[in-house]
Length: 272
Length: 88
Image (tube, rainbow over all chains, first blue to last red):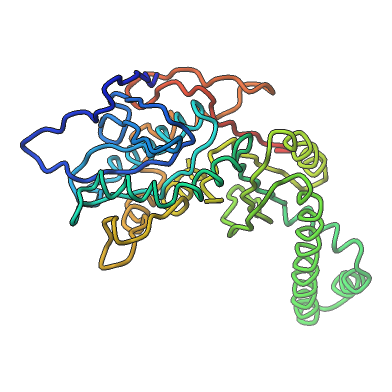
């Protein structure tokens, strides 16, 4: 459980004198004027606290002014999880956050890091506040649509007279000729599947568009287990629209050969 | 977990470069980290993936807070991320 305690003095946690802790690792900007400390909740157990500027705050921990570079996978994974947990906790508490990209560390120059960050918050105040307010009641969802190319391929083949004819020809031909026909059939099938994929994607985007406030088309990845990822979207969805999105995905998933994976709700990483 | 990696490492707000620490003038993103994290098997070995995936798996249709796991890696999430699969 991340304990959130109120810090009355408004001062950051004291940094160990031995090490240079002049950097400020920034997790996110949040729509809040609250001064809080999240003890030990950050990367490598650092305490995270809010740096407040007129109703918009940065969640930070003190660190040495250098990037986090992983020495091993375990460390890197823990850092990523810790970063997300802080963002998630802030999101839960205050309803709207702008997550920072990982490894955002403010340094000191003429001014110290704290001053630099405060000045940035002040300079960007209106823009940050507007964007934070626009995200209230919204969340990001990952929508991945998979299909079974064999199942859909059979359907495509069944509807294509040219392919049907080739199938007959293959049956009735000697081996050499049959091999050529089979190659031609595979090419036709491939083209048919590609055309169907484009059609399905266009169709899907048309259906999902009214269910989202915004979306991004992402690269597809290997689905594994024989399934092929047809489409990968990051969607920004307000709470009111979510049931509509779920309904569309439910309908899609009932189609032969299709399945859907919905991940979320997440803070709006992809829409910052 | 993969959903999270891509987002935490590559997405999010970027502060203007002059006050943040960069790599040779380029704001750092998760390049080295991504290389370090490529290899889900390794993460599985450390049990992090299992803990994370278990927490994000939807128990039932309702959105429930994720159960508190064991160990320091799993604080209870006030609103857990849910993962739903349809038609699988």
